[in-house]
Length: 130
Image (cartoon, rainbow, N blue to C red; front, side, top):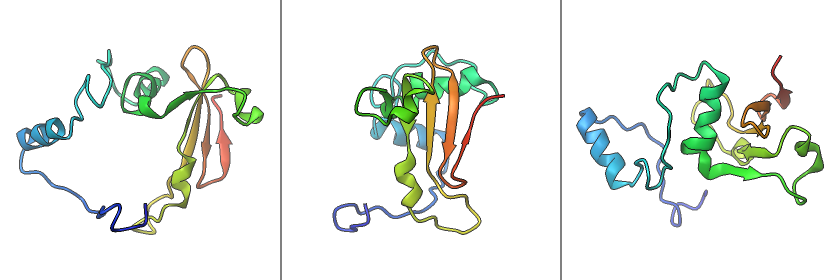
């Protein structure tokens, strides 16, 4: 990712002139439901309930990172449930401003698709409900 020739990515904020322009850009990038992003039944996305958070990973943009635990996965992780999204690779990425929190997390889900644990790579701490 750090090779500018292979990955000519420039970190910047993009400000679009209108919502229509944003929709057109998302369509051109194929970031629309049913193409690069799976269809969703999400109608009440609010990030305030466990169900809403879970839907991001099972029926939204996080679905591409979802994996089922198997014999090659660290046995320590399997006690938190059969599903996991591991974004710990992002912990080593540079942040553009020291005011921002470092990236990286691992989210575990049970068979009912509910969060059972979140490992925060910045704090090096596992958080569990309750």
